[in-house]
Length: 184
Image (tube, rainbow, N blue to C red; front, side):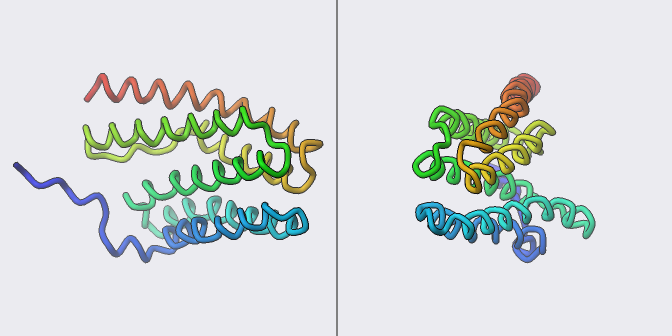
């Protein structure tokens, strides 16, 4: 039996872009704790905004420094999914975020992670994000920030707009998974 190739090197742990991704995960518990308390809404808003700002910066920073890495390609989308899904769960409990949307988000994200795992096991590669997935992250971030700041009044319209790229991402990721399975 031949050994499996290493997916990433330990030096990638210290790339500034990957450190930003780790910081996103480290900020998540604070964001969720603040969301539980209505009087800490501004702190939650600030924490989530900083958290998702790291997402906007880590990819361009990795490309600028020539440090695009398998670790970053793996961690970044997982961090996004954990942050957005956890935030949606907490907002459903505290700010009127629709439960149906929360479950759809979780369903889609679990499906993406499981499909990526299957692709990785078959092809030993990490597939990149689709453009609709990136747009969905931006739109859902805006919607969650609106829900934190103003509840359903401004959050619901932002959320319904976010469902456009969200639906498109369902189709794109599903189609890509089917193509990868047929070609592998």
